[in-house]
Amino acid sequence: MRTLRHLPTGLALLLALAACGQSEDAGSSPLPDPVGSWSVESLTTGGRTLHAPAAARVDLKQDEATGNYGCNGFTAKVVPEGSSALTVTPGATTNMACENQEFETAFAQLFKGRLTIDRGPDRLTLKTADGSTIALTSQPPAPDAPLAATEWTVDSLVDGATVSSVPAEAAGKARFTLTTDGTASGSLGCNRFSAKATVDGPTVTFGPLTTTRMACEGPAGEVERTLTALFGSGPLTWKIQGQNLTLTAPDGKGLTAKGATAAE
Image (cartoon, rainbow, N blue to C red; front, side):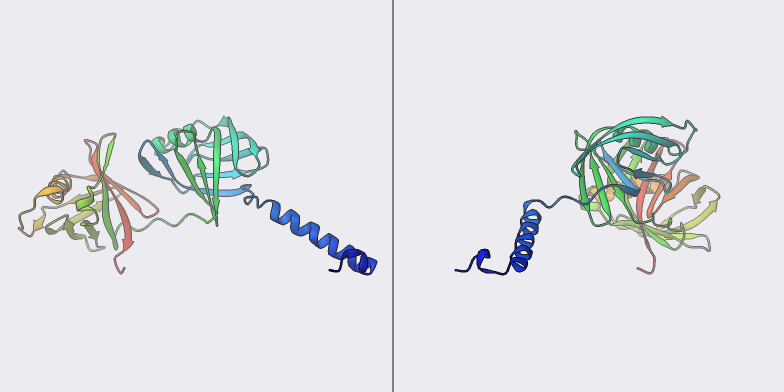
């Protein structure tokens, strides 16, 4: 077996350097550096997912972070632990009254203390000790879907501060589309419906619903009765963030829905 001492000096040196480099590469495979500019996609905490407004972002540097909770700006001190975790100490923040105060408050509560890091292509997830997460992406935020010409699939029902996912047996069955000529149609979870839909700035009002007349029991029937009451309760405040729609009645009841273009 030939050894390096049998080779010319220059070639032996090159082989030795190459072997050293291979040893270092095999010894560790660090995660990509989390430093960079990130748009916030969503927060998951307390069993709920809160979708981020377009302005929510975090700019991570080696020892500090700046960003926006969705309306108010903030600064923070950052102490990294390699690329696996970081500790965040909040600094200064603006103090404006903001529309999406629930998201702002939740973001501020989560983005502090020790956060572990899960990094994927174009994505970064920060996780708190109790398992809550901040989902970040390096991609620019998607534009808001239009209210009309989008098919909305109901994914949760709202009653004040309580948000309940649609039961699994009824998931994907309640969906509706508004058109630009002032009508709405779709499924309440069991029966199909159609109605007039008048959009006036931030509100939409559904006229009397015309429906098919199948008997609907179980979870699908419960969802249908809830939606029938909601659509008939008068003007509903609508809000869209990305592909997510919220309809809210004056009494705090409402729904959230996920959007896809009607053509899809």
